[in-house]
Structure formats: structure tokens, C-alpha cells
Amino acid sequence: MSYVVIVGAGPTGLALACGLAAADVPVRIVEKHDEPATTSRALGLQPRGVEVLDRLGALADLPERSVRIARVVTHVDGRPMAGLRVGQPTKLVKRPGLLMSQTEVEAALRQRLSALGVEVEWGKELLSVTRDASGVTLSFPGEQIRSAWLVGCDGAHSRVRKAAGIGFPGVAVIEDFLLADVQADLPVPSDTVSVWLRADSMLGAFPLPGDRLWRLMAPARRDGMGPGDEGVVGELTRQLRHHAGLDPSVVAKVLWSSRFRIHRRLASTYRRGRILLAGDAAHIHSPFGGQGMNTGLGDAENLAWKLALVARGAAPDSLLDTYEAERRPLAREVLASTSSLTRLVVGNTPFARAARDRLFVPLMNRPLVQRLIWEQSSQLKIHYRNGPLGSRLRDRWPSGMPQAGDRVPDMPCRRPDGSPTRLHAELGARWALLAPVPGDADAYLAVAERHLASAAPLTPVTPSTALGGHVMLVRPDGHLAWRGNVTASLDTWLRTRLGTTTNHTPENHDT
Image 1: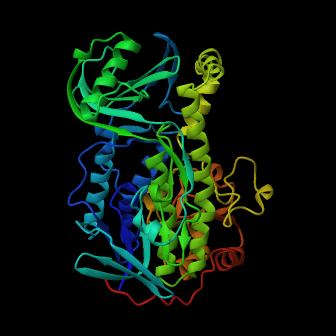
Image 2: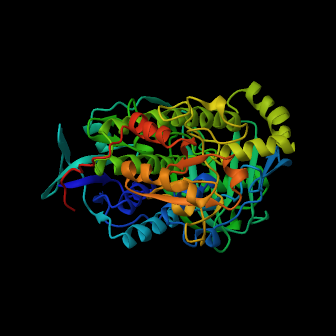
Image 3: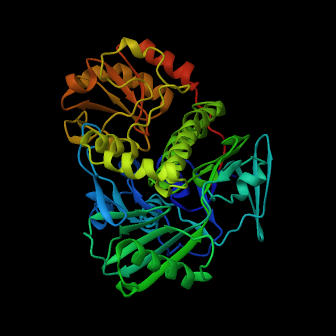
């Protein structure tokens, strides 16, 4: 019996498989398509998504091959009205987001997964699922697979979600949207996203890696548009003329086009017995703000370390309930914020358009507003303080110090042998124990390893600033688990909050 089967080899499924394989959990990942997708689909990694791939060892050379966006310029009635600076370092955000095709992200994750000894099983279309108290049986053409756990990462039309009987309520945000990746000579800088707004229509142009490559995006007209790819491209080039005064001949080649309807949907639960959901199978929303792929990567990283503890018999399967408790509220917030942004940009009513053009767009020129927008979209403000593993004593700790559930920023550290490393480079498949002095970690490390099997003892290069005199246990996903200066307190936290034991009895399974 395979311990975990993942259905869906998009970014979420691949990231989850990488996290599990790195933790030595037997995993299979199956995909109904016969080969990897070649169309770009989602664009971009927010700084949080970059961190996830870094911790998984899958970032590779993506930063060198991406487009680094410096500004988002918004035009109103043909005139540039706001220049939103993005990618600038702030106290929170230390590295930029990356603008690139989803196919590039998937390829990097597949390469990392292959290095971990796992290959995607292509051409396996899920037919049915039967679950019971001890596992899940999956039926494919000519084959059945028995698994302890099943994770549906198979998108908005997830068969896993439907087989589990999990609801997916929601509404359409707006009618239809048009996308096309084109080779074009646009008279705008290649490090700039350009947005044109006029009445109730809009057009966006996003630079892509490559020779004069751009993504064009616009709402579809309610009537008068031709069918198929020609209709999509014809409408987008018409919008280029309407908004920017550009002749359609600037588009030299069309690489891909699509027409889709934006929906806002959230799964009623992320878990039913031994079946779990992640990524678009659990939540879908407007692409405005570039949050979708990054939210799915966050789901995968959160779930991976929890499934790993359950697989080793170090924690009860009730730990998996904390996955939904931590991630579903964030998805609800993303759905609400991206829907609001979509309504604001499209301007469906005269009042909404007036507020957009005269209030919100001019506000984007203010440095404080620019910083707030950039930091919020980065996803680095995500925390789990209010979840079941979050802080219950947050007022005890010094102001500015991370609380339980907070993201712990990456920092230079030293290993016990004195060699340099980074905190996030040690995470992904294991925990990290940060102590002000190397020897101080020994007693805490012994407690952590009895419960968790593996933890990296590290000393920050500037321990007084980073730790405030305390020892910190950092989760594999980069969030603070525990802080204190009494080993018995750590032992209690691991037993009561994670439910871990020191007598691990992993479930029998094979690969």
C-alpha cells in the first residue's frame, strides 16, 4: 500500500510530493494528462511562493530566468495616472516576486521531485474512489491503487473532491475573461505591467520571459465577439487600439489564448476521513492580484510536514485537522480580497468607476500605500497565531519578536560545526531549533528529536536580535512553533499541541 497518493501534477501537487518525498514518506503522484502542459496559465511567484520553492530545494535558476517587475502603471482614459512600485525591498519583503509561466514553475518542481526519486505517473485518469477507516482505494483504467491517504490537487473540477462528497459553493465574479500570450512590439518598458482603464472596460499587458513576449488580459464583451482563438485575439487587439491607440499589427504572433469565467468558490471542508484537498481543488478565485498559485503552494507546504509526522507515527491523524484550521481562513480572505479587487478594476457601476478613477488610482502614488499593497500581496504577512497551533501567551514576549504561528524571517545562521547556512535552507523537510549559544541547544534538541525524529540545531549570526534571549523551534514551513527557555515547556507543547509521542509506530507501507 502506498502511503500517500496525490492526484494532480500542477504546482500544488508537485510541491506536496516534494515535501513528502524529502521527509522520506512514500508518495505517488498521478496525472490524467499524458504529458506536462505547455501553455503558461498562471503567472508569477509572490515572495512567499519564492520562499516555498526555496525551502523545497526547487527554486533552482528560476530567479535568473524570470522577469523582475519594477512598476505597475495604471492609465485612466488613456493617461498614466499611477505608477505603483513593486519588488522594492522593505522591512518585511527582502526579495522580489518572479514573473514567469506556470510551466516553468512546474518544470522546476518536477526536476526536484525526480532528484528525490519520484516521477509523475502520466496518463492516469481517476475513475472512482472508495474510502474506509484504514485507507482509500483508487480505480484507474486497468489498475487499482490502495493508499493510506489521498490528496486531491486536481483543480477546480476535482474528481477527488466530488468522490469525497465535499461541497464547493460559490458564485461567478464576472462573466468572462480573455487571455492571450503573444509576441508583440508594445511601446512600454519590459519591466512594467501596464493597465488601461476606461469606463467599464480594462486591458492589462504583462511582460513574459523571452523575446517581446506579453500576456494580454481583458474582460470579454457581452456580445459581438467571434468564436474560438480568433475571436479572443481579435477582441484583445481591439482593446489595444481602444485603450492604448495601438494598431493590431503590433501583435506579430499568438502563442496561446483562452476564454474563461471567473468563479469564487471555497470547499466546505478540506478533509473527509482519509481524503484531503489542496490548491484549486479547495479554492478558486479571480486571478487579479496573482494569489492563486502561491496560495496552493502554501497549502502544500503546510500539509506536507503534518502528513510526514502522521506517516512516521509521531502524531495522531487529528493533527491533519489543523491543516484546514490554518489554511481555510486564509483562502476565505484571498477570495474576498481578489473579488473586491476585480470589482474595483472592472468598475461595474458609475459610482464604482468614479471611486476607482478619482480616489483609488491616485492613492497608489503614495509611498505608504505602495508599501502596504506590496507587502500584502507578497503573502509574507500570513500567520497562524489564531489557529490551534498559534500563540496563547503572545503578550509575554518582547515587542517585535515572532509569536507562535508567525512566519520567521530567513536569517544567516551557523551549524554546530561552525559552517554558514540560512534558516530557510535548513527547513522544508525538517524542523529547526534556534538557540543563542550552540551548546544551549543540546537539551532542547534531545527533546525535539524524541518527538520529531529530526531537527536542525542552528545559531543565528546575530542571536540577540533574532531570538531575544530565547530558544525557538521553527516548523518546516518557516512558522514559529514554540519559544521559551525551559525544556519541560517544549516537551509539554509537543505532546499537547501536536499530540506527538516518543514511541513512534509508523504504519506499514511500501512504495
